Length: 413
Image (cartoon, rainbow, N blue to C red; front, side):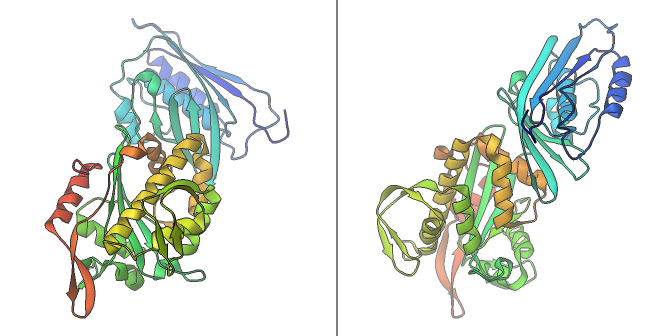
């Protein structure tokens, strides 16, 4: 074994429909360690908890073998599968309450449930995160500094269950700040504003752009261009204003500035992008032929900044959605095992009020989507003036779109 490699750990549990299982499981959990650093010197171990079944249904044996598992995670994964194999018995490990409810109607299997998987782990926002892949099953876990792992979401395909990555729909606000290098992105105008909706269980979702010059009622009172709200009060107020405007329960926001956006795309390795038409715009440095090409950070930023377009900011907001879809294709090509690394990059180059658990489950939801069928629209509006300012007045069609997004997907996208 190379120094630093974690051992493969095989853990098993025998389940019965007997109350004795509760005592056995409690003793098993009490014996589990929760150190934050993996044990690289102890050989692989087999830990078994079992109880004789006196009930009519036969016993079910659950075994879990994970490669590269942080200490303590394997026991929580075992607890998840133990619960999924017998939902009549309360789980003895921490599992998101919504996932417990989601799995409660499973028909308990009989015989052996053998789980063999690999783990990729990382750390974001002072929390450990992990993605477990076991065949077609995906398990998402998060832990604090003391290694108290919690199952945050799962797709248990072997039991015929679609993904549960949080209560649906998942809705969030993506904000692009026009802060230049050296400027605080949270104190400048919102250069782009997008709502994203995802339904992980069905693999559906949508992107809705809001024109940055939309004339809105700010949450602190009075009307203003939406782009100016962040410069005045920051992203929390932008989020609150967006919630009031759309009547959507947006979970939180993610903000990036010019420098962060460019750095994120470069660290991400760039992505293939199909430029919809040729453009040569010196202000944004958007000089592109039409067609498929590899975009680095500078290319993506130049394309995103180009406002000299037919349709102006409406077209530019639509283009931002195209960039999101292209990035999503790259993410899916990399595979969900790469998610912890990608989230570490995300938090390095962005600001968010989402928790580590929310980021992990929301980002994992993207892997359930089919990018090429993802609706990408911009809220409808008409250009007008408010005093001497040029603004966009959102139309009834825009509010219909917001209402349509309430379930996470646009029916008319």
